[in-house]
Length: 259
Ligand SMILES: C[S@@+](CC[C@H](N)C(=O)[O-])C[C@H]1O[C@@H](n2cnc3c(N)ncnc32)[C@H](O)[C@@H]1O
Image 1 (cartoon, rainbow, N blue to C red):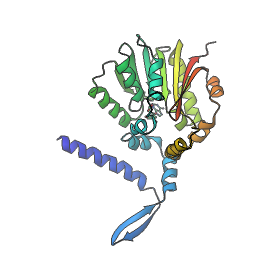
Image 2 (cartoon, rainbow, N blue to C red):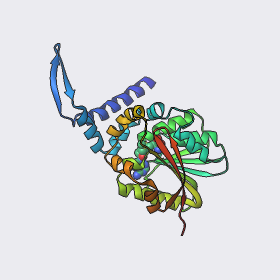
Image 3 (cartoon, helix red, strand yellow):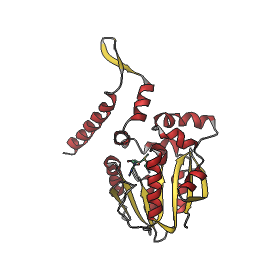
Image 4 (cartoon, rainbow, N blue to C red):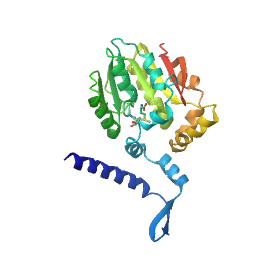
């Protein structure tokens, strides 16, 4: 039974992958009597960028946690640790907005037992992986819900901390602004918004290692990368109180601007 489930899952994954590959131009060739094809890597990257994020996340969910393995490796500069260090071990409510596989949420729930962590995301594939991790690690103070981060059903000022990690750069500006507006509504007046975003590295080796992320990220990435973050967050009613420069990334700790 387990075997069948695993194979069905693999089969579904292959179907998703093929639905993307099918849209590509390819050049059929025969090598040593074997019929195969050449696919242009630029076309793959373009298609990936243009593609509906839903499909991208469906495929990506299988490999998503590899980001932490490849990019967030040094103990001192790990952005997940920087986020964890901001959250106190107190009776606080934390929202991991667009939680993906809950890389932040689960770590916080495990290390901050008194905190209550809620993860929300639109992708069932990402949430299924998060659910498995929560079950496997027997995490009691974390839960996940499928919902749109721009329009949640939580009441105003419910949370002490809202985390938006590795999200804003991959969505359209209007959507990112709507997400920040919802984060503002959900945060207590003395609460904090924590944003994790990719950051340009000064090291050549790091820039080379970062190239696949730059190529594969969707279209809004370049413009978001170049934004003056202080101005951007200020336009969205948040004030940066601390920045933590981490592996390939930066964690922004912010307060609400309350009129
Ligand atoms: C790159 S992943 C980031 C996952 C996680 N925050 C992390 O730090 O690894 C982006 C996630 O945002 C989710 N997402 C994008 N738009 C969303 C929306 N409007 N509402 C909820 N989730 C959304 C995607 O489904 C995806 O899981």
